[in-house]
Length: 439
Image 1 (cartoon, rainbow, N blue to C red):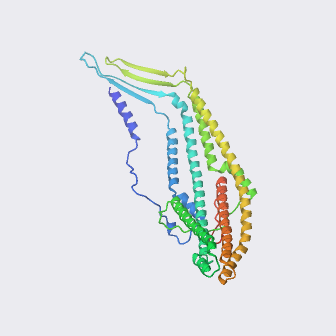
Image 2: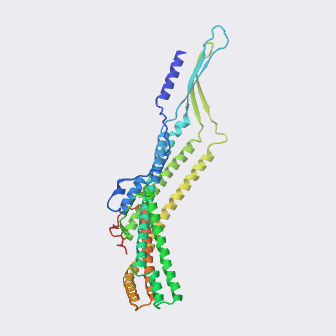
Image 3: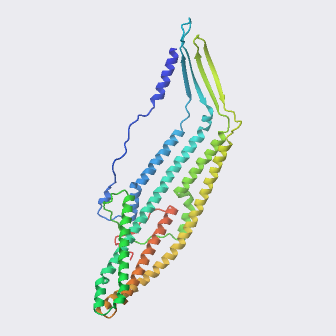
């Protein structure tokens, strides 16, 4: 009996020796923003600097990093061998018969199928941990792309605000000049309605551009986890650096090996391969073996060996094997589709970039003469050599082309950023210290 008690105490101490200690971790009660030193920097931030800070401080990425830690913990758990089962009991006689003693029994049971499938379980968890790490890298690339797009949107909105503000003030394009033209007889009252409508349209565009600039800057602050009232001064935006056809083809050859989402899909496929293998192993009978040492109340000692066998008569694991194999085929099809999409999207973006770049070049050439004509029209209108209505037409034509040019530049930047993400290309900075450099 003393031997039994000693064994029970040893088993209990071993079980409790490696236990973790619980400590509470309460939820936060208020908003918490990161205010890093870059918020106080004297120089405006470049696109690359903003993207780097988004990776470092984005709260959604922080959640993804915690998820990766969960996957690593699951991999650690799966790597542990299954525990044997220990059982113990004691029998105390309730009558007072002579020669009766306390009986006892204790034993160990091992699940052999758990040992057989353990390597597959460990391999599945390890592959999923690798997949979580690559998924995190892909989310970081997506965050970089989002930061760059918001950077572009805020800059383009700022250019539009500057353009429309100058058109309303510098070019004498306001209600006072229209009313003066009516009083001087240069503009018929019935013609003024169209001119006022043009002015209101410009003012409406200006308001929309101002809201777009505020929204994009606010979204960018949220992306880098800055407080809404924190300063965020951005450098001006230059022209995007476009990959040539040869460089794009070379990058496309490496995209399968380098792009994190494709690597993550391969890791997920490896995990599923192990899941299929585990399902095949699991079809074998589940065998449990056990050893028992016992003594009854009459002081008869026994040692026994037991075997429990699960007979695969009705369920031989065919259903689970079919499920795992079908899941594997689904992942294989998804992987092939993702590769096809990458190549198709790259080709589409390249074709669009050629058209957009050509149109930008044509507009930039035409804008030189259009601006001169608009300025000359404004001077002629002030000297009385040109009607206000004609001046309006010149100004509106120039504004329309400028707006189109800003739209095209934003579209080109969007395509370049998307292409960089698709190819997992490294960041390159094209900022300029002059916000009007792209005009």
